[in-house]
Length: 289
Image (cartoon, rainbow, N blue to C red; front, side, top):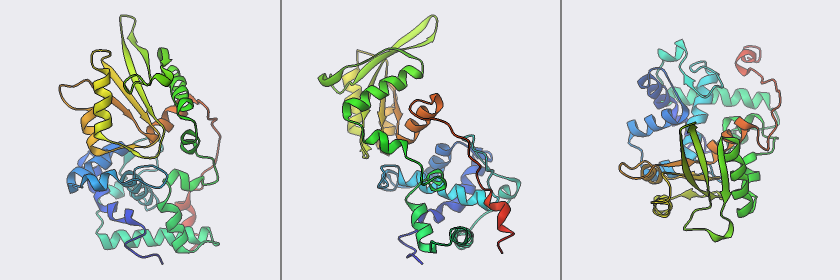
């Protein structure tokens, strides 16, 4: 089995995730839950900003995996509608670190039996490096990887198309001029009487956008627009999120890799929906004992 300190770090979030959902009224959006855990445990920016090799945020991915195991255990609802919710069993449950590890090992062994060609350590490794959704469809091409392979100008242009599909008008990419960090602009109409100009910046890479980069973008947009958007295939540091929402300064919307994928899927831009049947592992478990 893999070493405890190098594999399956997400087990430590099992109990805090249950506690966070109870504090949120038994349900919450994924980021709300992660933020509540971070707030309650006073997690450092170093933990919150760590990234995976794929460029995704490691902490949020670990919390997502903790949620997946709790779904398999019947403590969380399996709904795919973007809200995590405690089941009746989950409302009454708490997990110590020891109990969490027992739950984890039970389901790792179950998946190992379902994938007999893989040992326990390989199953854990596969999970650690992917999101729960990626693990279930590991043979599918990843949209984020495709976006990261585009040229910088190509990514700017596809972001232009994405904004158009989401209701923006007169969207223009400024091209090679890189006007003070501004990659483009567009108009968003709120209603027939109100519309405003929005500036946007596109960052096609696997890294983390820093607070300084958000500040530089805001400085470039002051006096030119009331709203700004930064779209990246990477992630945003905890400090950059605080900077984007700083009181008294123009607000900046942050779109990270995960949200970017959701935006593409919502309007089916460059992606095609497919119907699949997901195996309900909880149902079959009793027949494998």
